[in-house]
Image: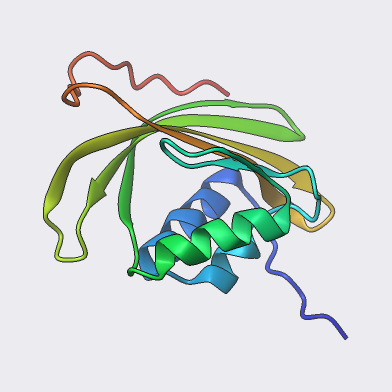
Length: 143
């Protein structure tokens, strides 16, 4: 009998689990967060578009082969309805030792509500040019 997957009651819960799994380099926990759909999409900074569970899993396995990636998501801009949610945020990247790297990522995470709870269908991350300026970005959250 297949293992029951954890249900996430809110988009914030699954997003927290997503970044936690990345920080722990826990591939199984990370992949359990994705929708059961071969149309899921992941784009890493400077990467190609990956479609489907196998391609996305292989890419994260390569990333985790060198250890976890410590990401602190900030400046969330959210749009949500009953069945889907889009989160756009800034990912602050640090080393395993906690040293802040001079890089920030603009990411968009798309979630859908399924019978198994909220699941990720798209993660698109792009390196942002220049230095991160918290003063210029609005922190408005839309619901």
